[in-house]
Amino acid sequence: MRLLVRRVHAASVRVASSVVGQIDQGLLVYIGIEKIDQVTDLEWGSKKILGLRIFDDNEGKMNLPVRDDMGILVVSQFTLCGNLKKGYRPSFNKAAPPSLAISLYEQFLEILGNSFGGSLETGKFGAHMNIEMKEDGPVTIWLDSQNKSY
Image (tube, rainbow, N blue to C red; front, top):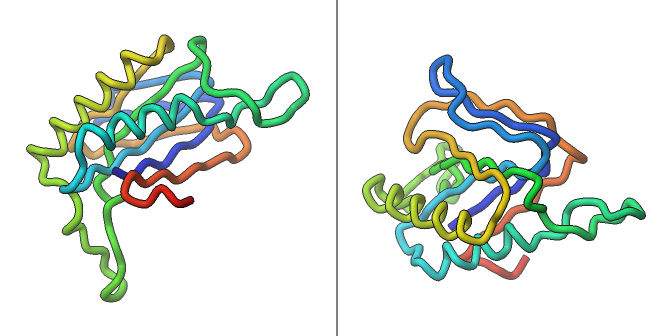
């Protein structure tokens, strides 16, 4: 599972002309699910997201995790699973097929929601989405459950 986590002042996602998910201050999380991902990857990702100390404390130091008075907007994005080993056109052969990906995506949302008391919003799985965000920082964190070394 690959996660791209962005600290935001606000973010929203639209499908067609309708807003389907929206948060104020918090995290915008893009998630790409791979064929080899298991529930343990989902649990690891949820724990990491909720534990990331990327919000400023009273002294202006990034030292605090996302709080329950903030929001998390989760957007599925299979292109995070792409690779460019053979040229310039990305290959998505590591991405989970939609039937597996949606099941794991929904489990991930359940795991995350059970541990987070704030507003948990989502995009629409498999849809073409328009995403707007007002970045805070910028602060962007890359997480990969298959490569935890960075």
